[in-house]
Length: 403
Image (tube, rainbow, N blue to C red):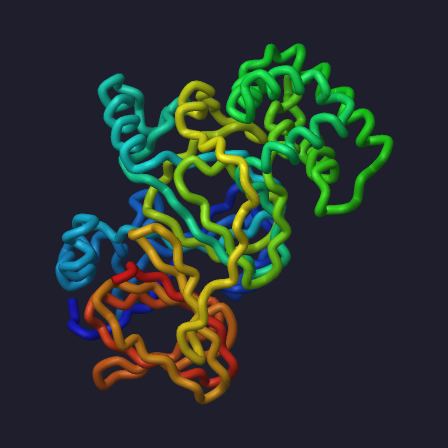
């Protein structure tokens, strides 16, 4: 590894069916004449899809690059806390269709679950595998467009009001009064499928006649989910219930939420920058054809009922706004530079990944300078010092480990 150098980074596109057709191809300067879904752009060293480092005419995968010289790439601070692995995964995510309702485990739950499934000889790629690794997966994101999502349970009074106001859901008041939010959710997830179908068929029939169009209302997303997730055997996806139980958020560009362990959530529509611990552990609760382990889901979900926090980050300089979270694995910030303005990473003890969302920049390091255009990214190893100068108005997102 050449000391003090920054390296151009080429991410990996994930073509999940729910992905958008335009945002990521436009960002990367690619044509998409065949309307292939571009769901996520991964910038990290996750074994499933490591990004590539470009240096002159040579290239190498980021995970291999780190393995060859972890001390220089990560720094002793990161190695001491997270071992010889990049602790975060940086993404651009573009949701054209709704993602599954899901929750992520805590670190201890992930370690226990991963060891248990390994001991049971469940293959890592088995469809009934819950834990793909032994890490937790807290995540922060910043909306790039208007963005809709579900995030955590609503306050108890609001859930009660919703159940009373939705005639098809009035039978759910009994388990709610008897056992609270946790009991209600367990009741829904264990309800016999014929009862699920009866309740949801009645709801969807009514919504189809009303044709809700307000994207800030649960009815709109319930009708959309019914169209998006038609079950091949004619049954309804019980994840539709969660649309009425969870907080429905409409984020404006620049607004953010944090999903810690146990927070039930789902991305519904829009484009966002996302930074998370480097993990692929997901426990699903509906709006999916993938495997749902109800018992493991119940063990993981946090049933706290409260208003979801939307935050806009903290301005720490003329150029940088940091979206701080409780996570020790990562820190996300947004850099906004006008033409000819500069930004230097004065505290550079940890590895960084920087993505240029808009504009054109020059990056100086040592005695060299590289030019980066929209959609390009670079990896800065620990202790590397660089200076970014905007050649025109520029917006960047920066991932690192808090120090």
